[in-house]
Each structure stands twice: as structure tokens, then as C-alpha cells.
Image 1 (cartoon, rainbow, N blue to C red):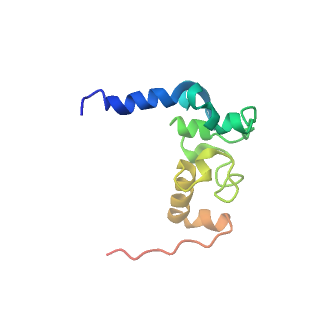
Image 2: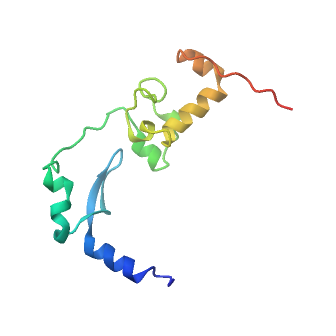
Length: 131
């Protein structure tokens, strides 16, 4: 395969998609960061078909997930982390799924720091005997 990629696949992508600006949760709009269906495939575009293009979600004013996503802060540096923002009550994209940086950090933090779990009302993690 050439270093430039698969020419047939690239041609298909260029036919079906167009590069566009996109708003990303926690970060905002990034120019040319996403694809949308090209005009030839507009009839299959759910955003157009269901007229949801003007729906905008408000971001939490206390959530700093955008800074976490950009590597500017660690999850525990957000004042909402572990208090107002938990896996059961997520405020941002990074706490929503188990793969999110905040959710993973929350889980590991809770396992490593028994006092933190007690403060959160959870049972402390059992210590594992090490050989």
C-alpha cells in the first residue's frame, strides 16, 4: 500500500463526505475537524432529515472536561471532580463513559485511596495482599 493510503478508499471518502467545522463537547468549535455527508448523499443525513442541526447542548459552567481533553489539567484539578461530577452524575464528556479520562481517574482514585471512597459514601476497596 502506498504511503499516501489506499487511493480507491480515499476517492470513496471524498465522494461521500465533506470536511466541515464541528463543535466538540468540552472544547468548542474546531475548524475542519469533522466530516458531514456530501450533497450527493444529503438524503441520508440525519441532521438534515430530522431537522436537528440547530439543537445545541449547554455545557456545564463548572466542568473543565475540555481542559482535561487538551491535557491542560488532570481530572482531580477540576473543582467538580468527585463531588458534583461522578460517573453517576457526569457533567462532561470525560466522565460520561468508562473510557473517559475523568471516569477512569475517578475509579482508580477510589481504589487507591480508601478515605476518598468513605467520604463519597461508598465502601472502601479491599486491600490486596502482595507477595
